[in-house]
Amino acid sequence: MSRVRILGVDPGSRFTGFGVIENEAGRSRLIAAGRLDVREGTMADRLLGVLNGLADVIREYQPQESAVEETFVNRVNAASALVLGQARGAAICACAQAGLPVSEYAAAQVKLAIAGNGRADKEQVAHMVRILLNTREALAADASDALAVALTHAHVRITRLRTGDALKRAWG
Image (cartoon, rainbow, N blue to C red; front, side, top):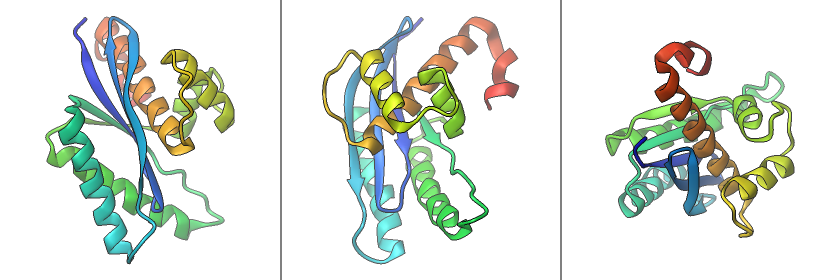
């Protein structure tokens, strides 16, 4: 199986996490991780910050594929879901503008793929991300979440390569 560089994104309207991994033959290694601080300015300014910040990350690290976490829709706070959806849209546009294929994963899918439990907490996921990438590096929660999305995509990608598109309906 060929080597692929994957950008994972955890979209947010205040902080957007990103993680870049390289995967070859089922083994992943950390290339870069961080978060974009987009707390300043109007909502339009913040969305532009997500778009431009991720465009810079894409230019610097040259991923070939991307994966973005889906927005959790909470009926109690629909306004927050709407704002997160806008940040997610800006992230998807940055990837699409660069010509990257974009895969999308629900938070529960990411938690299940990384920690073996669709209801795992952030600490469990962060711990498994460090184990899977063989790093002791302390990562911001947003960056760790983005790496988890990238790792999920790497796992799904390898499974698809081995099984064809049979799993496409289940994983999107």
